[in-house]
Image (cartoon, rainbow, N blue to C red; front, side, top):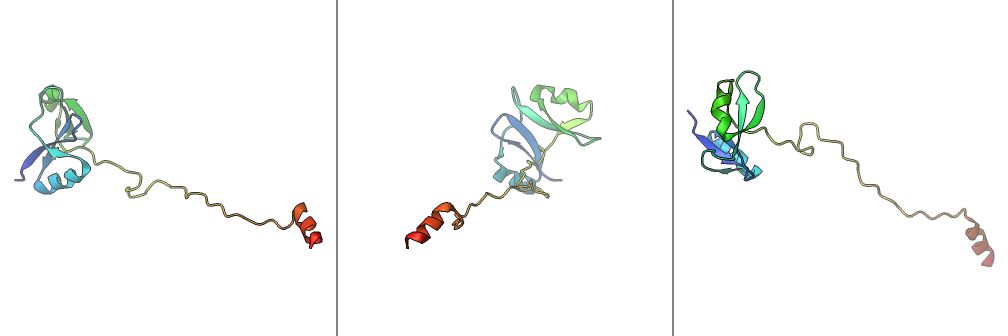
Length: 113
């Protein structure tokens, strides 16, 4: 059986992470180990049937457990740049100065020579 770790994002959300590999995967994403949730903490729960995730107040975790919600890891953060199909990024417009030789000033300059 894997060891379970309580982790926090530092903003009041806590999640139950299973296994050292998962714990180590969440650390670079800003999560750190912490004490069990209490008070005003919010806890990530996952439903045992449909797999949905939601944050609940720590005081309500036991009440929601009877409805199939149990402490879990948070959803993986999605970045439009690191997704399987990244968001379309419009390349920056580049402007190259052009020399227009067909203008009226060009004719006048060629007569001066």
